[in-house]
Length: 255
Image (cartoon, rainbow, N blue to C red; front, side, top):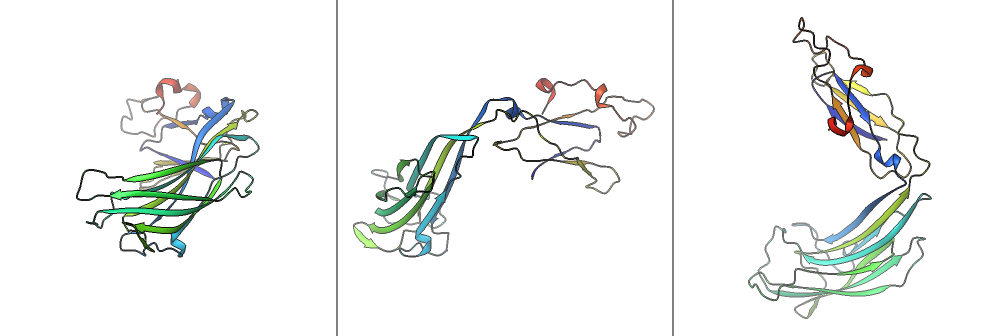
């Protein structure tokens, strides 16, 4: 169930839900999925053969109303510039990966062997490589495993703590919304008195999810002084306004 909230101290609130995606033929959006191999600060080191030396990334596959324009796979080896522990030695690091991939039908694709390297230079400003990446296409699932690590040409089993490996899948997905122009089914709004003063000051709006919708856009309008009565200038609840008597245009007056 999707939920959105709007708050205001006044009870004279008029809200409407406008779903722009319901009036289009299709909707496009890039859907990212990622996983990281890294050593948390003062945490367990990443060691070859351990579970934390591998990662699996799985993207959602398109539904019956959707199709994917492209699927980009990316693996990055990089220096975490925000790592809390300083490493003062100049190091050249090379990492060998085994990469397994699956297509949209979850059928295995050919395995790949990948080498990525960085040149860590905390005391120099030349020949510094902060990250290196490689890209593939059309895999909806990837499994990345560290097979070898070389630091200054010497094999080691532990990934330096200031390094990270990030696997990503980026899906550019289009959804056909033809036939979905019947609007959003709104549930009854829930009004709540959050500060216990006997007056409602929060409203919760709920609606059923829509097949194929990637995002929902909520537009609301706060009506402040309609029906003002000079005999009750300090009572915001004195006049109840029929929404049919309120002139509004979401193009210019919405938030």
